[in-house]
Amino acid sequence: AAGQPPAQRGTLGALYVGTIGHQTMPNTDTLFWFDGTDKWYPTGLHAAVPAPVLAIACRPEFPMEVWAGTTVGVWQGVRTDHGADAPTWAWTQRVNGLPEAAVEDLAFHSFNGVTLLRAAIAARGVWELRLDQPTVADRTYLRIHQDDLRYAAPALETPQPPTGPRRVLKKRDLVTDRSWHGSPDIRPRKAPAALAAPSTLPWRRTPFRGTKEQLRRFQAAMRSSTGDPRIVANGIWDVYFSEVLRDHGAPTLAVPAKGPPNPMPALNVARINAAFWDQHMQAPHSTREPWGTGTPTEADLYELTPEIPEGDAGRTSFGLRRGPLKVDIVVHHRGTPRNGADVRVTLLQWLDPKPSNRARINKTSTWFTDPVPWTAAVNEVLNSAAGTTAQPLGPGWSFVGTTDATRRQSPTGTLDNTRASVVTFDLDTSTLEHNRVILLVAVVRAGGNIALAPLTLQEMALTRHEVAVRSMHVTQF
Image 1 (cartoon, helix red, strand yellow):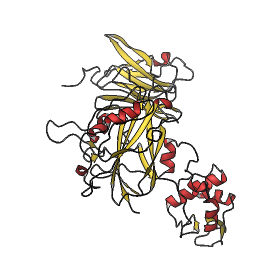
Image 2 (cartoon, helix red, strand yellow):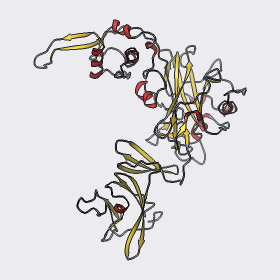
Image 3 (tube, one colour):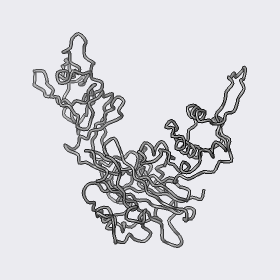
Image 4 (cartoon, helix red, strand yellow):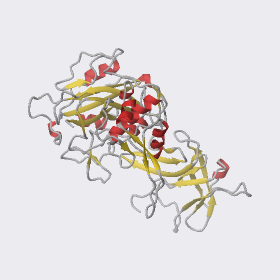
């Protein structure tokens, strides 16, 4: 048909079928091709790799190719036709970016000129291989949103109209605008602080009368005071946590047995009362992070801190009660493992300097919309050995961190495809009034020098993989 590849099959349609092989006939092939007319042909995959085939994928635009997922990885076959003679396949193992492990499923994903082969690996998650370029440069990056992998710039956008407003991100319904200022890699949260015994104590599992964040704070303090790694500070009270409480001498409540119609055996229900709370909510345990001492992992942030929404494009992503905050920056890397010492991160904030008619929560046109004035200063801070700069940032802009040591940080350890790294900045919003808008901008430099040029915040977030933006506002409660 018009616009489609030339026909490479008979009238019945070509077809691949994979098998696990044959126990008593070891040379039996594991992948066969039907020519669309009346013949099946072995592809010779078994001769290249004697392993069962678990998944098959084909791209219509490349009808001579086939991708096979086996128990020992992914193989690519290219068919060559020989007229009346049987076709042959040339097989290549694709292990540059994909593991040699059992492949449960294969799928192609294309967007903005980027084509990825995604492989579901048994017990090892989803891996991907980029196919539209012969080589892909290493990249250390921050994401715009949860689904952004910074392959293309701009990322996951609808087509640019010839006239009218600039293009915007779309959510998965392809209709609703997606926020460019709700990066999941900029994660503000309340700094851990001692918490007085809640008035709702005593608590027990059912019914639980506290809040998830109150319980999370107590679990963090108890994990620190007892040194018990079984305590997970996630704000969840399950049967497992009740057993841990009993092991550490928590008070119990005797519940007598109940008969029909709803029988229940006698129980000693673990509780948290004010005395048990105060026993563990002592310095230094009362201000411990949920993961203890040291740097959190990305998994820690998702499991052990409150969920942070992406938010809508037309308003701040979320509000956070004023006071001391921690802002965690999650840095990702794709490619050859990179030493964290080669990566530098800085964080800026914008507060509207106008004395009245300041930036509004639900009106992005009142936010900072000019090309950013701080690129020279940020380039200097990230590129210079000492992290210093005398360049101006512009009205309303400041570094989060007032000293050379606090305005720039480097991750610890090694960054690779499977391990992001986290750096944390301190931000105090105690003196800000209710509903004050804050724009946070994180910038990462990896390897060589960075050279940012002035763009609007939206353009910077969409086109520079080193930059991400998070909008938020301050609340009283």
